[in-house]
Length: 219
Image (tube, rainbow, N blue to C red; front, side):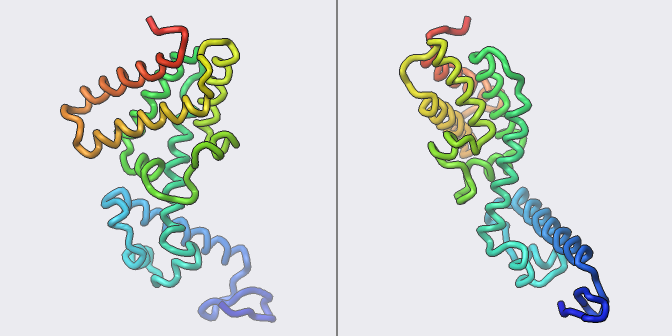
């Protein structure tokens, strides 16, 4: 880009462009880069994320990507945030209610997310990123919408003497660890049987885990 004092705007390829057009083009290109990266990630995972291939499909030079994303990790971080946003959307859509029933519905929502959107799940929970939520500080600071609901309901249950002395944040990370661990084993082919059998196993394990903390039990 160069600056033309007569038109008072940036010039690209000899064409005078106002700042709004330049910004719109910038945003559009960034969105295209992300869309192509997301498609490559959905198809091949992180191994398929090549900045050179992404640039070629978008129609820009590889170096031009760095105007929008500082490096490859920044693009990966964007994918992680996209996955977390989708999980938050699903989690917030789970109807509130009595804690034990809500935990069961939340477990179903998590399982649906993991099995229906495996790449988004991978981005949200399995990829190293500085933008990912970290236990315990990010959850205590309510930077995770789903985590905030967990802690709110567990806090209410604790106040009503429905759970023992264990802190809600530790219950939450235990539930998260069990659910993510089971899904990871299933994805790696370490749990025999098909999806229906795994869903049943997941629900039984989650119910036993949650019940172990509550003085009130499911029927």
